[in-house]
Length: 246
Ligand SMILES: [Zn+2]
Image (cartoon, rainbow, N blue to C red; front, side, top):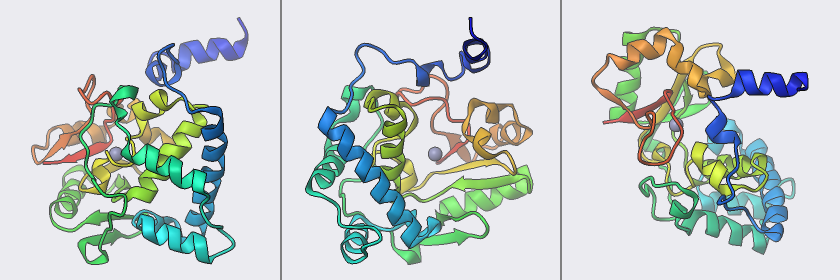
């Protein structure tokens, strides 16, 4: 056994097993769609660079089309890219083993600036009202080591995460949808948010977050829920960092 394989089998399995192993029944993009996905992924990254990380979380589909059309640094979306966006937004993800609820009906969904609040130093927004209040309560109950890692995500942001995940899953949509909800199915678009431990970086988005004191404290609080616990019926991986607004 090569050292790399050894490390892989002992360190990563079984925590990530569900995310890494492809099944024969997994559904992939077609060859043409794969090349379209690559150009779409790059265009969305150029768009994010242009509008800024925080703003990218909340811009609408129509705003994205406008910026792409008018700024050559981004470049207009191609017909094939639009077709792929529509497929990923409108198709039924049950075929991929994703059974979550649809949260947004319109591809043109807009997030009004007056309905959200920007959380300093995070690059993220929260919806005013319950989510903002829950986050404030979390900070005071769990402590200052807790931080918002992802808040409001409109369609374009959710699409970009999904597209990027499909890219890194080599076109395997079944595998991608275990860890990122399809663009019409994210609770980030209507209420939920993610938290992590300050300074933990990407580990905040692994099962390791469940071993932190921050998580243990969160479990004792009755005003929030856990949207994606182990073996949730949505078909989503265990996400201890994802706060369900109840
Ligand atoms: Zn989340």
